[in-house]
Length: 303
Length: 312
Image (cartoon, rainbow over all chains, first blue to last red):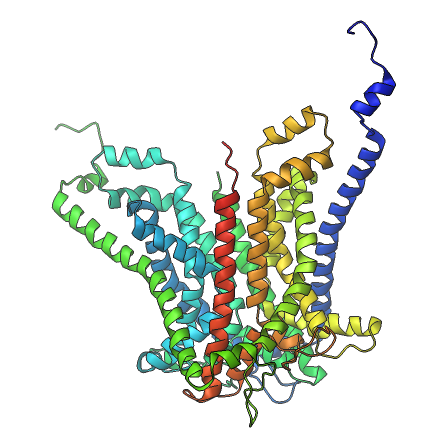
């Protein structure tokens, strides 16, 4: 048997390679996958470029320095831009300590028990709850229940709602950043007689900070793009003043860039759509700046 | 005069064996941070309680049976009808259109990024995807209403200015980066030894991807799909802006419809007084929405746990 040379006809039936056809399928599959990537990128690029040219005629200084108006040629997003900056700063102040603290607790201090397991599952679940549900929560808790403190549909109520929305993201980012710090550093610190908290404060946290900041900035950029929860709070109102820089300022009604854009998009007049496109450019520039900072931080400190 | 060979230690004050103080400050901090971690649990409780309490008020006035079986949804009319199925069908239609765009394109893009693209291209495309995933939904709403609908109207003559088709298509585009990015993570995590083994047995690259790599990454891919569906169900601004606010029980994607999320926005835009039936209605709809997405999340969790392949 072994002495016989392999019969080509036999091998073909037993071990049919059909290489030509198979390679043809390979090429087709590869081409298809490249088409998918290129198509996705091209569609998104076309959309973004189109909105850029739509908004360009109205993208001027006046847009940034005028209040909303009934006349499209006068309409601007001064109050919306200021409102977004307020929301961003307040949300950062509320979220950063709570999110980072919770992340440090879960990663460094908590034992592996049912309690932490529940918190973990719970955080994963919260990250997938639709944002509009947070709006319903905020409407009931921050706008109605805590209205003596927040002043009803105020910028503070908005910031608290957005904080709850992005808290899971900040917690997860903090944990990932802490996980990336090698354990040997913790053991070295503990061996020198430091307490766990001293090790975390002096050694681990500074090393994890760039990662934590990256995650927090990305979460904040998600928060300032959110429209639905703020609308649910009842924030879609005509605001032609700026909140004062005081504690009372926190309790004043507000508007924000995405809300103002939504308002303009949903009007029938075409001139307002142009203003909306210009508003979108401003919003995208803010977001790109934040994302750029986050990516810069990540690249700079990544080892 | 004797001079010390060493400069005085600036940090010498740090070396104090104040164990009691250190221990108590640690206890304080751990307690505080533990409370912060509890905030997330409280959020869940808050969501469930607000939704259930107000929805309970709604179900006092409208029976659950009517809510689930009525085929009309006209809560703001003089003679209100509450058939949630009308809104659910709107959500299902936009979601179905969205995932038929996002899942195939997203998976193919993920395969391309992980298996075919060179590391240089991947390094650029991956952050680009993450940035695209962060484009706010109100921007996509603008695209759907003012770019995609007019373009589609040139092709489909009977298309209404507000319709489920363009809202669904743009919804699909908006969740595509999420699908691509998460699936890519799962595919990229498949160890190279599996690919080498398959090549060693004589398989081509496509055969390796389809028969070895994708099955190995299946749990991650499926859970990214489920997450994308859950995102599409909960997405609000695109469908509010582009799909119309017209609750209709239909399978026709060219007419205006309303989704669950769009209805909540519609009521929020008008000032429904607290305690009114219209106000309670948004909580009943919110509860239904929450239950749908919760089911999807649990499903995704289960898929990952049940089918995850572990490699070293």
